[in-house]
Length: 492
Image (cartoon, rainbow, N blue to C red; front, side):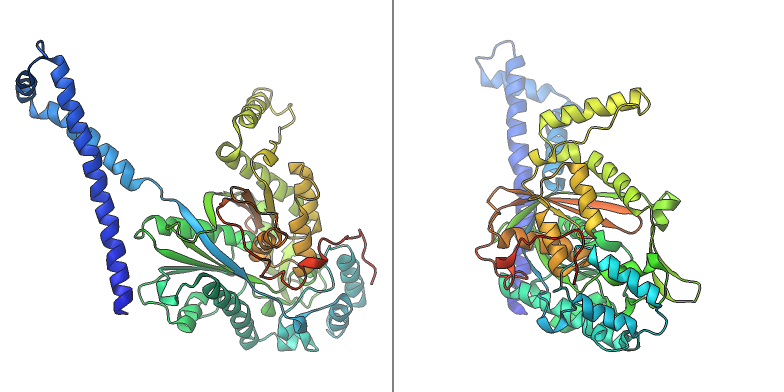
């Protein structure tokens, strides 16, 4: 603890030393410039004494406006400007073979639920065949018992948290060499399971984190919550001492959310969502960093009732709780994506694309929407795309809307096939896929796109500093088999 105290004291000293250095760096040249300016105003510039005399003749207010005010403004800018935030590394939960749920197993378990009709089972069969999921996706241990719903207890849900979250965090600490008491900020997101004590408390207790840690648990934010957590951690790092570290954990606990009713719109999550999670370490220090965070752009369309209700947790007519996915979901997601594109385009696109986008936007406004909206070519801004693997339809729609190639959406399709919809952590499995394939290069730019309830579309732009040295990670045992062909209808 003494060593940790000295490290924090040193970091604080360096921060204030740097701030005072900025003051001197600006104030001294500004004062010198003022002296030179006064000297130039002197009728006889040959004599330095004349310049000094003129300086003495100035009123205090003039001196303040000429020297101290600009210096103060420049100093405030240097101290308050946003700091760069870096991704030191990340780790994804590695699913175990004993958690694998082939289609046949999933459907057999569904038939053992007395409230599910044969019609609902046939619907789930057709959905799975067209979902884009493979036969190796995994569900938590409780879902391997028959009948499943009887084993989805609070204790089983906590056991899933222990398995997924602690495994990912353990691997992250091992990869980075960071000690638990080096963590200054902790942000966790899990939408549907919010126990007491919270996820933050569970992690603090497990790793014995410091008592002064800044911890937040985000719930109900949907599948885009990981990028919200990244944005929150970035903001907190801006006001923490230089070199502080933030741990971001993203997961979705599947155990307590098994729907046992027959509403088709509420059966979809049963078929698509699978176990998964990720942990990421952020810092304002570039030491050992692998990516630099360039931008986080959030778009929330929840002011519209249709958007607010398109992903909605509710009870069916028999009192069974589930997530209702609206038939208008893809349309609403498309509108949210357009709004997000409008916000992020000026930040990332080259000048030529920005000009085309601006002209099309002006023309569309002037002609009351009669001009087709111009979709910028984001392939000029990013080399890699990590699109939330929410389902086959989501990936298809974004590929069409953004005019992306099959290779550019390959990471999303393969993550969906191998791991299923792992909710907010899916973008990290996709980033791991790109790196496991050896496609990441120094300077490459990555666009993460997430969609979530509310309805939200969130983006994060990264720049690679140091690619992964090997394919170790969630794809270690299967990357050699990918990519695979995914038929329109998978017969099993």
